[in-house]
Image (cartoon, rainbow, N blue to C red; front, side, top):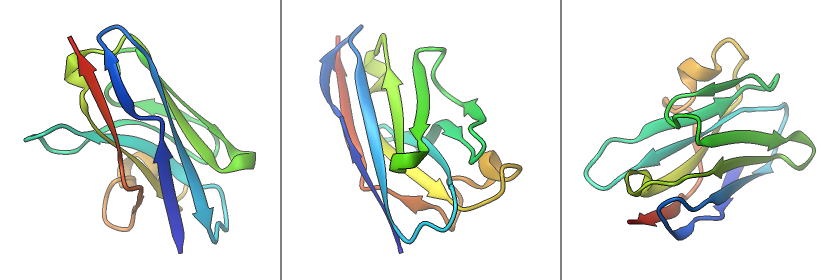
Length: 125
């Protein structure tokens, strides 16, 4: 069993920064594909960014303001968020899946993905 634990959410004013972290626990047999998703009230969950086991990064939603990174030795994923906007307000979820680098972007978030409990990010204007 694999567990993901997020931290680092909070409330900031527009223009501020936050750094989210996601620690992976459990029986980790290989380096997983990992990523961040978010869900705002009344909206569907959307991908933010992901990083495959080789370190290749795909950004889905960030406009260059977010940076995803990982520390494989610590099995920890990060999301540095700068120049935050009120529309970034959402619950942010960490996701992980043990798939090949070719399937990371396509399969992360689909059934079979491990999810964290979420961390709230609130940006006020």
